[in-house]
Length: 286
Image (cartoon, rainbow, N blue to C red; front, side):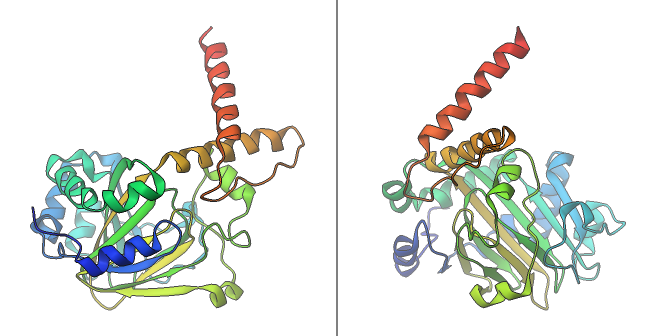
């Protein structure tokens, strides 16, 4: 694939928004053969089982805990075959396991490197996810630790976004728990709707989702297929390690200040966590 994935207007919109603001984009990969349902069913058969996820997804509360998400009683492969009727959601994780999808990811993200690198530095840890969803499926409120572009390939959906790391929605204790292995699903309060920004997309449209921005998603009245391509930056890794360091401080009774948001730096706490983690590994090994 050598065609331009993003037209000039989409590139300009991303450049104006990145990295802190969500924005709607357009793209040219909606009809890519790797994003057809048949191709994705074949991909699911090739991926490692632990990187396949599926569950019932209609009429879910926005603040449901991950552990409480209901199962649909089907295998992941049967769920894909019956996606139009089974009221479910399938997630294919880490599609870069497959060489063809890894090549697609590199091609697409390579076309925005000249926009991303001047703002947040080298694009690190490319990861790809495919969402295959029944009509009216809900993805509950959560945040992601990566920069993300969500490409719509089939059907339509609305993503409702909230301000990045909104402290009323995501507490520092929640960040600290997440970066130490906790769930990313967030609780929900109806009063938060007033600060929401809904963005609806259909095939050929995409959303840039800022790192740490809480959001929830609902598909419309058709089967939906979306491709999520994510990357990290050095800043994002320092922020995560600063959250881990703060949890260490909180455990000994201190009340640490929150890690600072971009473009402020969190290297000191990050390096502190990394040093302590290295000592712990050495002690366990010895």
